[in-house]
Image (cartoon, rainbow, N blue to C red):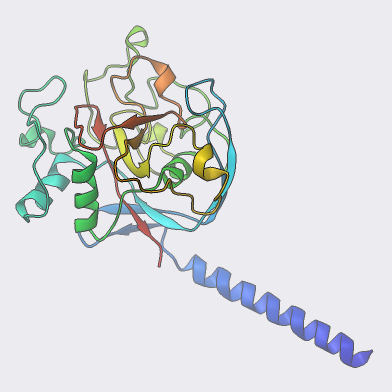
Length: 276
């Protein structure tokens, strides 16, 4: 009996020390970094969260408990200034238009250097992230970065107002520009991890193919889910832009399928990086 108790205590001690070591290792992972191009990125820790919210909106009528490994995501949307560096480096294609929704000279205008780059195709966004040794976030990663581990409707909570985001609701007067605003202009609208503008300003490309409702892949894979690649597919965008015909498009879970070759003044992007 004494030997059995000794073995049990030794085993429990080993488990406890291993767990403590792993926690200490994880604690050493910085919550905010700058990547090799000087872009600030925020840590989203591993764990489970609820993907989707029942909002009575097309193609988002279910919730799924999914688990994600830790990853980093850009703290801000990619700006004109960020993107110009990649173009000058020969790794990115300029936006298809120099204008914005209201400005005739936007992308190359120094006055708008800290505004989100627009008129970027999904392929352009993917190329930019790869230039940074990063990638587009998956749809599930984007949602967790926005929501955290509770079931909030918006990154900041469950109430929408002009204090939190640059979103398109004319009757509420939520047009501060009217158009895009400098990234990080709404500190009250941060996500639980300190990520800005995940709702409002511009919608954002994510990596996944648009599969209609997510049932097609989330019911089969709930750990690091990713919609399977198809030869031709629309890509998911999230985040409700400055001009999206009302508050119905603002919730985190609202998702649209857009042809990857399409580029317009309401869509931008940010990048993610796997934690190694």
